[in-house]
Length: 212
Ligand code: TYD
Image (cartoon, rainbow, N blue to C red; front, top):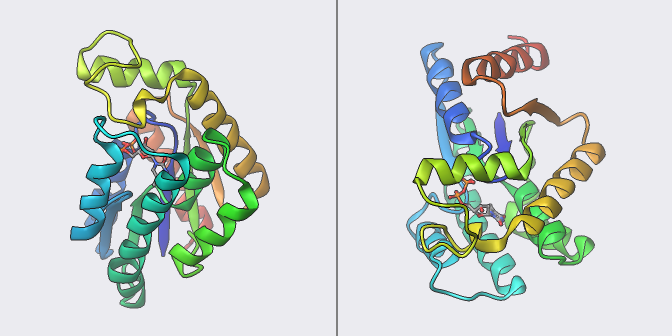
């Protein structure tokens, strides 16, 4: 089974992923936890190029780098893990590309679909949890985590985070449209609820959708 988590930066995905991985492992499920971009030696190198804020990267270059990182992860790790019957929990997958590079950067959505098909070997998540949060709240969280004043050009932020509030509004709108087109796969959760409550929603949805 492939479970993905999506949401804008600061939505709290990593907290939920580690809670879910712990609880599933506790129930004897074999779980592999991964994040995008990254997860193989080459994909982690690509991650550094993408996130280091010294580089300027074009939108198309950015898209292709995220896709290259994904192709490595899918072929080397995800396909074999799924074939072994493991549960893969993935922090971001192709919906991030549609939301960030498509809606955020304005790359043609149809063109994106072919690149996504190529980089994923047509693998799709069985379920996707979307942690819904207003960009302002998400960014406030992110800034307070890093204890820095709210400025988008801060050196403390990675290259994507420096994109500004309007960019994040487009990304959020993108996620909402993607969800409307994929209502069966997506579960939207209010990211401002306490972490334990969110975890409870997530496990309940999984039990309802995939009863043992
Ligand atoms: P990361 O530090 O992993 O952020 P987060 O904890 O919010 O997931 O950085 C990943 C960044 O890359 C994040 O800003 C989202 C962005 N991204 C894309 O723009 N397109 C993609 O296809 C993926 C996978 C990520």
